[in-house]
Image 1 (cartoon, helix red, strand yellow):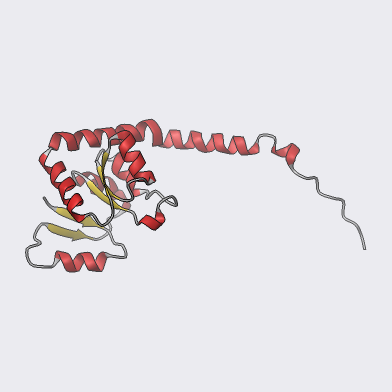
Image 2: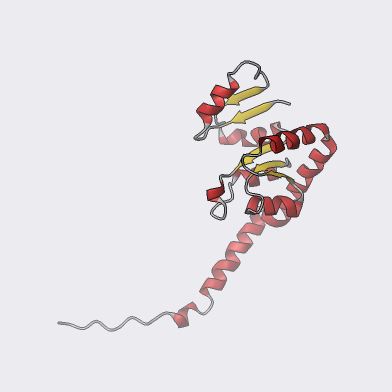
Length: 168
C-alpha cells in the first residue's frame, strides 16, 4: 500500500514530518498540480482519502468528494458517521466511512480495499454512476434554474411598491 498526498492543507507540515520518519518509504508528497492535470491526479489512486472535521459537518461537503467520484474512485471518508458525506457514501455504496480518531478502523478499511480489488473497483464505478445520475453539470444547472424559478414565482406581486417621495 502506497500513500500519495497531492496538495497542501493546514496539517501538511505534520504529514511531511511523519512521512520523513524511518520506515515510511510508502509515502510520497507532491505539490498542488496544475488544473489541466486534475484528471490525472484524481485517476492515479485506487481510492481517495477525504477528511472533514466534525465542526464542519452540516456546513460543507468538500468539492473534492465530487471530483473523486467523477474520476470513478471510491472515497475513504474520515468524517462523522451521520454526516452528509457518510450519508451519500452509504446511499450509493461508493466508498467507506471511518469516524475521526479511529486509526485502527481506518487501517482496516484501507487494507480491506487493497485486499479486495473487485470491491474497490465496484465502489468506484458506483461513484461515477452517482455523479452522472445525481450531480452532473447538466443536472446541477437544471436544479439551479428550478430554484431560481421557484424564487421568482409570484415575486412581482409580492414586492412592496415603493412609496412616492415627499419633498420637505
